[in-house]
Image (cartoon, rainbow, N blue to C red; front, side, top):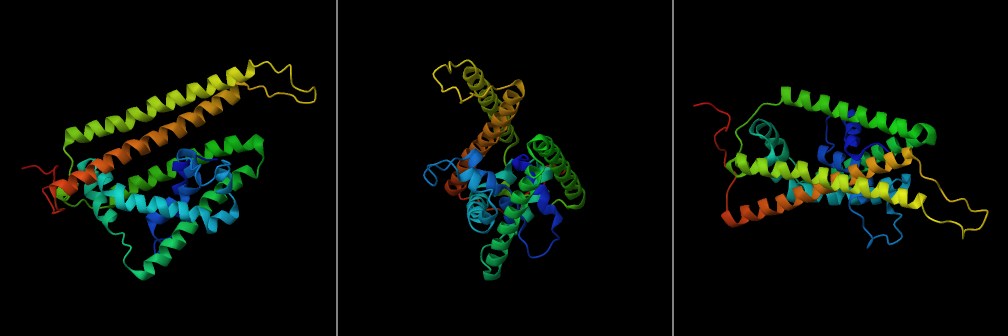
Length: 278
């Protein structure tokens, strides 16, 4: 399957209108949620990841998972995430982040529809790649991921060029030194945990190749893991562990940021532009 973070590229095909962008994005990533956050209490048989990629799940299971992501994003993550951005980016992003609201009754229907559409793009994209057979699926997944990131990069560049910068509210400004420390953790954690996951995965396959299978019946042929298999597993483990590590670091920072806001009672009044020259 294409890398999870490339999937939001598919929702850019939908025109602007009443659809909710953040709900589209969460829907487009939700089917892969259990890659990064296993839910054994919900599915002890560990088949939930397969189930989220069924066409029928687009209408119930995937939107529910996406709704959970949407709530976490808007209630916990979005303001701390804006505070982590460099001033030039935060000045462009914070007003868009504040536009979302749960209050309008009609918005609920558009949120639900956006979640379903986002999930449908994910499942449809994955199904399209697998339809060409195993021989081509890996190459198509890789090409799709690269294309998806290229589309997102182009969209981000256009957004940067066309979005005006506004003064960032004081409550959304993070000291540069603290911002650098958090970004250091965001970069270091996935590198360390991703590498640990990749190495452990390769070791597991090497150990499996060296196991004694003499007690198996003659008609059962044990698998032999090739270098290609080990490389694919290493990349997958690195990506999964890395994204999970980023999520944990951001969640810890977001909780701390929200608690500090509660204890200090800061209000988000507009402040001076950190990049403005005297």
